[in-house]
Amino acid sequence: MAGKGDAARAVVTGGAGAIGSLLVGSLLRSGAEVTVVDNLSSGRLENLGELRHHPRFRFVEADLLRPEMIRPSFEGATEVWHLAANPDIRRGTEDPRLDLEQGTLATFHVLEAMRAHGVKRIRFSSSSVVYGFPEKFPTPEDYGPLLPQSQYAAGKLGSEALISAFAHSYGMQGILYRFANIIGPGMTHGVLYDFFMKLKRDPRRLEVLGDGRQAKGYLLADDCVEGMRFVADRMTAPVDAFNLGPVDRIPVSEIAKKVVEAHGGTARIEYTGGERGWVGDVPQQLLATEKVRALGWSPRHTSAEAVDRAIRYLADEFGP
Amino acid sequence: MAGKGDAARAVVTGGAGAIGSLLVGSLLRSGAEVTVVDNLSSGRLENLGELRHHPRFRFVEADLLRPEMIRPSFEGATEVWHLAANPDIRRGTEDPRLDLEQGTLATFHVLEAMRAHGVKRIRFSSSSVVYGFPEKFPTPEDYGPLLPQSQYAAGKLGSEALISAFAHSYGMQGILYRFANIIGPGMTHGVLYDFFMKLKRDPRRLEVLGDGRQAKGYLLADDCVEGMRFVADRMTAPVDAFNLGPVDRIPVSEIAKKVVEAHGGTARIEYTGGERGWVGDVPQQLLATEKVRALGWSPRHTSAEAVDRAIRYLADEFGP
Image 1: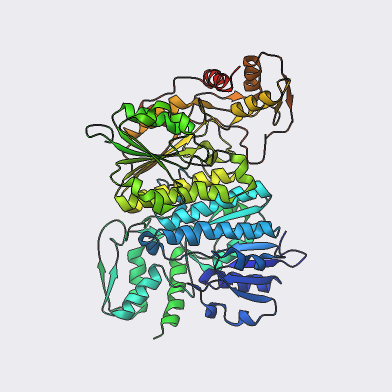
Image 2: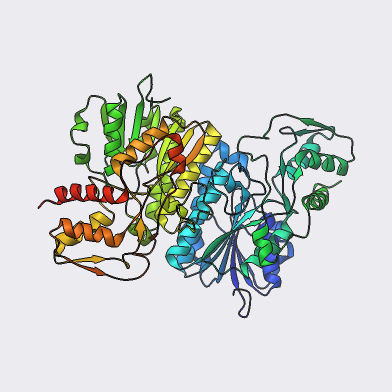
């Protein structure tokens, strides 16, 4: 198994992102060599901090849409963690080519680079959005039909499909992690980040898209990385999907209150109304986590605890 | 609803193929205007026969990978039947770019052409292969997780994902038909066609890939077209998936016997052995059909009847 015995040689796409940079730290601490491939379109070098100077760390600034540029980075690798993606679901609705390219096509080029160099293991950051707007909560991995509501979600499902096909056709192993909302340091999008940005522009009021009753599961990025590695050390199937999320969910209205409180408690919360915040949003999300629990892993925090911690990170990043 | 009241103006991609040409005939008989967009890579003009001279028929030879060439054909359309695809699953394993392009990317360009011209309805020929190698038979539409075994299957699932995202994001309506094995006149691939080709080359022996126990459902293309139109006239959801297949399945060994019999009964049947015929094959397939039955439609033939009829078509096409 990778990471046991011989040291792993890992490629992390999107390794300069909020989740990727934490994964890079975790892999380096386990003795792995790590090559980050990132085009810095949303990732930031400062997320990696001191890790950049680690002797087993290498950074390649390259776009996954340019196969000839990325291919050499996969030579000699023993595992690939494919996390690169467009992080902004709403932008994908304005320009559907974005998620086709940064989602499905980027994954295809990663898989072809792996095939060219005989790299067999791929671990992919998929998402709960592949379930569309499910009729069943908590939503298990065997839920169907999968009817995505956004271009971002279509890119995730298209990527899952390619990984499964490559695993079966060419003897690879693929892990499809279906994430809840992941929060933590270094975020550049998502509801918490949006709220802090809005209060920075106008500290007197906080506009909340929708009626505030949208409720989702939030997982700290640290917990997420731990769960990913736990599953990767144990899974034996050619390809399988695992939900990674907390046991509970929390409504947007509660998050808004927490953010306002952290911000001095004076801002007025205003709801735009409606069931959904925006086109492509999945207003309700709660993942069944029995499958990963059966392997032996549970997240350390509830959604509310995760949000509290993430708010502290953001308060630091946004400054006083 | 399309096809009732005002005449439909339909675009049929892959309309020169074995299924597409039958659909074109059906639509023309209902009074629709029909534009076929086909690059003739596997479709053949002779499949369309006399339909080509119909006053409401138009043929556009164009490749779906060239968006600027296909876009004008969608102007004024009221519905799109997207059937174009690489029909050869095995070729996709040799060159994974084939199904990425002819599957997922072609679907993307069709959807973008529709969006450009405000065309709202898309009906897509998906496939039972999206279920991968399911653990449940008959396999219902809500089966999961969807873990495709071939690049062809990944292209179908990637296309389904895009259609769902466009339907939800831009107010379109998408129907995902998940076909059993479709057989009939004008076939250029598939087990029956392969058997006839093999006997043409060597009438003394018929090599069968696998152990002959692979068993699937076979649906006549005429029945398939009828089912597609039946569902299209009734479905109201923004997007949904429907299995289209027979109630039973038939083993490859039985098909081999039927073909040999139709061929004079003297050829020796030889099995190569193994559970699967080839990499990417799904050796067992039986679709649950309760969902389309609940709408009021059932196929007219069993798998065995469909195979018998298709053998007669092929015997005619291959000649004495």
